[in-house]
Image: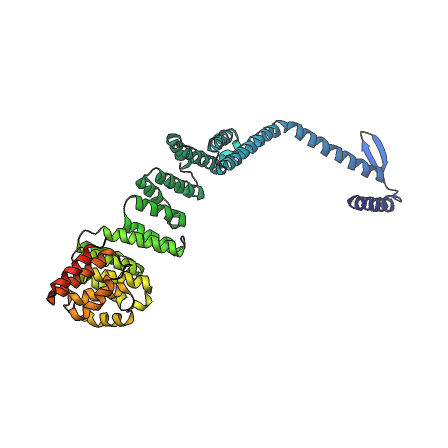
Length: 413
């Protein structure tokens, strides 16, 4: 189709020239040093065009000949640049394929070719990417000294300031520091990130690992909440992680005052989690701060219906441990829970222990017997329930019954 179009255009030009120049009788006279030359106008035009074309062609030929060395240099540089790019792609492919020795050699070759290519000198990102690939391969090969050398070159500051490569290099360096069990270096590298990069999911994951490695559960808990807000974990995994970190934070408290400060630092979501609240209440009870434990448990006890069976069991067992010195203001709450959850042994056991603490022996007997006879409860809860029943029997003067309850408690593994 293209040839047909060119043929049509050629015929059109021929027709135009025939119509224009066919009847042209003009002359061109040239005078030079007493000589006169007459030419037809048509010949003069064709000659001028021919001479002009010849001069342009000659000029282009001379320019091509003069520029031949420059083009040769450009061609050689282009070959080197393409070789460097090919070596970098090869290093990346070998790295992803798990052939780290080959990846390191390809990355080193790319760096060498980068030095030979003047065009790549203005592209510092190329060499830094190659250095990162080499450092990553050496890290996988456990060659830490050479890895650190390559990493230092990749982290070297450039005139262009921070970039994605800078941030990526620091994130990789922090990850490798964690692999080396060097949490402090990982935190130092993460602290060098700009604020926007420090809030990314990968940076927060590394920060969480560093905090846990350095045994700082409070910082780890705060970071885990940020990750949960970014939906970095599934809901079940996030809940389990947050509960675990909250438990570690609470267990670090060595006295009641320190435990109160830790509780105030917890996120409001943690203070509403029945598992976390129960852990805090048990820890407070172990530190002779049962009043604080009951204060933390009270908001959850007043909405037991929204906690689910597992949540009610956790809260109830925590109250079981923290019922020492319980006041009369709890009696309406206990009676309401006893009516609402008659089949839940954990709730009944907590109610029985609280009533026994208030020396309401008649009301305490039935819920304590229900808890003591339930094999699904924790052994320590059942033992305490049997011993509370033994104390109740002694109050009533029934030593045989008390001895039988103590024997039942002793038989629980």
